[in-house]
Image 1 (tube, helix red, strand yellow):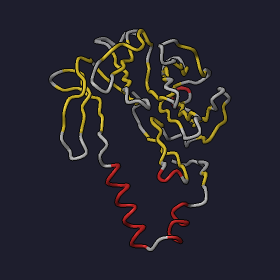
Image 2 (tube, helix red, strand yellow; image 1 turned 120 degrees about the horizontal axis):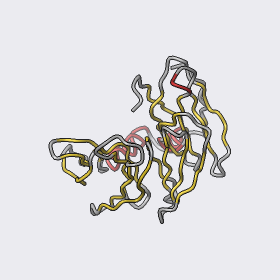
Image 3 (cartoon, rainbow, N blue to C red; image 1 turned 120 degrees about the vertical axis):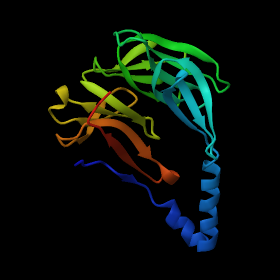
Length: 230
């Protein structure tokens, strides 16, 4: 992948800390942060003999089922209070039968939005608004926590991956017409204005985005390359 991605750097907190503490003390701080992060659970959507389910892996590798009763769950995203939002496709691939489910931390499942065309990816902002990429119609919808919907962005072709940075800007990867021309990575400000962050090599087929955010000192965009979008 040939991209020119913007990398924003602040003055390194690691460098400043190394001036204040010995290397031994600094190493101990890193180990404590890693130990704290390892207590998080990993949530995975998928299917098995029981149908569409959400699996939970604890920090020590133990596997359990967090939610079941889905058909073909796809993308997942958490809000700040621990609610999980899941895209699920119905028994058929007909347009308008996909839904987004909301799963509370105690496992209660409710329908958050229904009769969607072809939702591909989810992202949730700091305020709990759910952003949904409509792969077929080239739209990004925004849902308020009460479920009301509006169009946040249009004019895309095949939006796929989405991710928020710490400033509340939404980054979206879009595949151009039939993946013939270059795809792009866009940055949307909270007011919906857009700038182009990167134009991808014509051989690339971007599918997902993620930020590395360690110590909040710098960010880089990682884009997943795929030869089979959805």
